[in-house]
Image (cartoon, rainbow, N blue to C red; front, side):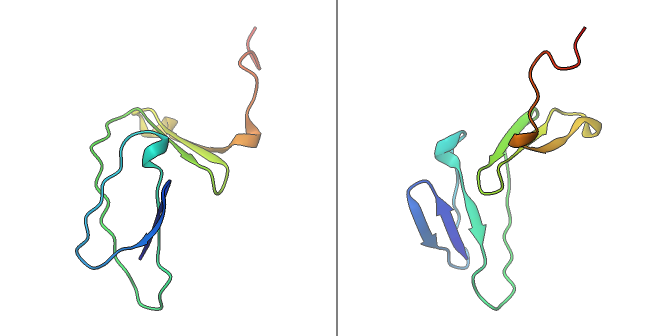
Length: 86
């Protein structure tokens, strides 16, 4: 497994434990570059609401607490604050 974070990349080994701070300093991506199946357990202490930014795909995810309102959008789909307001 390859872990990408703001300081670069490193290889993870079986049993490794890593943590990430809140905000841009905690940005991360885990990838399997190998042929074998790899399993990763991710646990979060974050409660809702939560927001995540996905720079590789230029998306934002928003989880406000009610599953019906969860949102995943591309940044390019943004509208002005006053759009649709009277």
